[in-house]
Image (cartoon, rainbow, N blue to C red; front, side, top):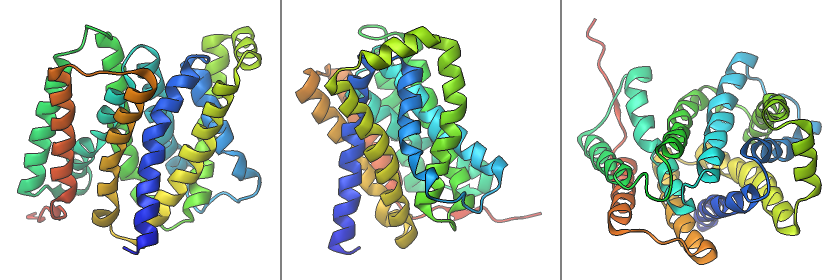
Length: 291
């Protein structure tokens, strides 16, 4: 990779890590459904200028429902209900574990020995983290947050079927498809009065947070990531995502004074190590067809 591309990959990871902090700040003022709706509404504004990519509506809806709507709505609910930001950033990145596992079923990609080892290590880390649930956040909040990496992984696999289209156009339309049902859900779940009072009562911090989440971390960062994946192999690009939980945890520690107990910290480090083993191992091979 060229130095400029290395810089962009690192920049995207930093943006995504800081987005967890921005989400926490926005959720201090907005309900999870409204915050997620605004996130995608802002990121969908380029749809006014770009045409729908050459992707079927069923595929577009499926990718949007998993990669965007499901992932970020679960994140918002988990963080809003007490899951620490730094921990949330680690749990979301465990999507690599589920992506490899689901690829075995969907595409017959047999994981390498190193990938199996990485899955086992990451799974042990998640078990360690689950042992700390119930002290400063509920089991329910943790369960909802775990939906995020699972649907994230499904979205990753679906996205493979649309990589030949312009990434910026695709992500803009994915955001639009997510924003429409979320708008209806927000009005039903929160009510028009709550939505109105939340919007007019936003502080400058809340406004800057939601704008940065929508315009920078969702629209621009995903576009840059898509371009990097288009121009380079996944093995070259994806490992930079390992920086996300470190940036998220460090930023949360500075902004919110977040601290981790020994077991939770050990679990977080174990998960990241497991992900590193999976991402840095040789690419999975297809299972031979013996039929």
